[in-house]
Amino acid sequence: MGKAFMRIFLAFAFLLAFSSCEDIDSFFEESASGRNVLSFTLNGEKVYQARSGGFPSEYPLCRHATYRFNSDSSSVSVDASLAHKCFSDISLTLPAGKVAKDASFSPELSMVYLYLPQIAHWGEPEVGEGYTATPLVVDRKAEYRYATIKQASVRIRRWDPDARVLAGNFTMEGQYQDSTGRVIPFKVTDGMFDVTDDIYPN
Image (cartoon, rainbow, N blue to C red; front, side, top):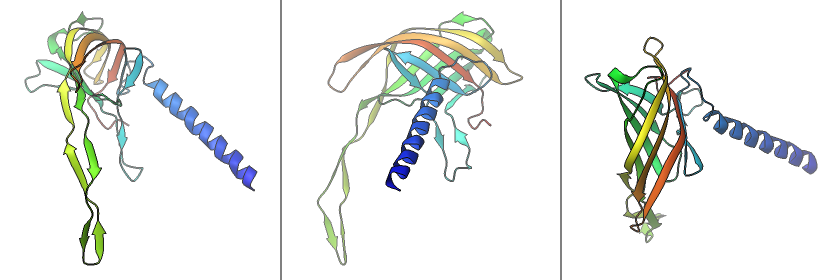
């Protein structure tokens, strides 16, 4: 019974790992069909957009990679939250009048990163009538800052306002400063986005 259970457990673990790898790799497959994905390589590390789903499981999956027009429609921004330990958000702002298939230009680009990690610890126990509670004390809260972008480029592969699909590629170079004062340069290559304006795609 024990060996049979172990075989089933190992098979399930293998399938889970395999499906997870397949899922991550799918973020880096170049497409232009409105998959709501964004990915890039940062100093050799693969980075892709965060995803979240609700509970129960029938709640829609929020992919966090979309485009949106600003209030006067003069520009369109591709935005994504990132599944990364340091960088949390990316935004590429494109002049709406220049967005067309095969167009290339320098966008306004921002990257948000975690400057000061949050530090918390358990405090002194609080004792009351019939209970004892241990509070969580936060010594310093997480602080986020914008990285300095030195240069960036975007090439549009598809822009279809009727289908509400925007796809393209991007690169950039920049630097950020960690909480010790060290300046860290970074280079982004193989950037790809394939997004719609719907954060809850089917």
